[in-house]
Amino acid sequence: MRLDVEGVSVETADGVRLVEDIRLAVGSGAFVGLVGPNGSGKSTLLRCVYRALRPACGVVRAGGDDVHALEPRAAARRLAALPQESPAEFDFTVAEVVAMGRMPHRGRTAADDGAVCAAAMERTGVARLAHRGFLGLSGGEKQRVLIARALAQQPEVLVLDEPTNHLDIAHQLQVLSLVRGSGLTVLAALHDLNLAAAYCDVLYVVAAGRVVASGPPHEVLRPELLAEVFGVRAHPVRHPETGAVRLLFDPLPPTP
Image (cartoon, rainbow, N blue to C red):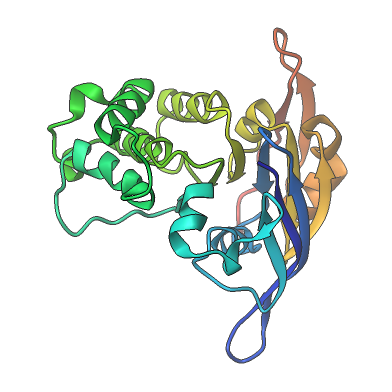
């Protein structure tokens, strides 16, 4: 399913624009990354996409339909989200957390909810954790459980806000490989530019609430743009096996 963001702007109650006329497109089955400095508007934009925030103007479309005009359960059957923080007040088991993904389908389908959840847990490698409490899991385990819940939701679009935050490198690669292989249309905000270059088909660079560049990673991650947007000196190189662009960064001088 295609995802389109058409002229979306977000402003505070006192009229300050946080996001200004953002336009982007995620083709069906593509993995598109949002990159930019802290405070650039990436999370604000994603909150509009997964309906946690209504834009001041503009439209977010999934499969051609305005997601904010859809009935909540209908929207949840099209789109699943993993926000930066997913707090849980109660220590549900892993199986119970994953089963929450079936809520948009309750009373509508004859699908075996248990089988769908079991398949999602198997696919994400958390089946052995089914009876463990969610709050007692490691960060990487929690992320894989939340991805299992999203897969159990059976959406066509997946929205991720910093899915590799607080994870070690092995779990970062595990999570992004899992998402990349899901077959879903994916829009993700990512901090690590090298991970974004390795896994994303297209990158949108956001600065001060606006898109300042977009395209394949090797076209977007140019030294002059990185210097302007991130304030760093970078040297693009090619991975010897995959050919994907990689960035080597010069150390920043000490802060006076």
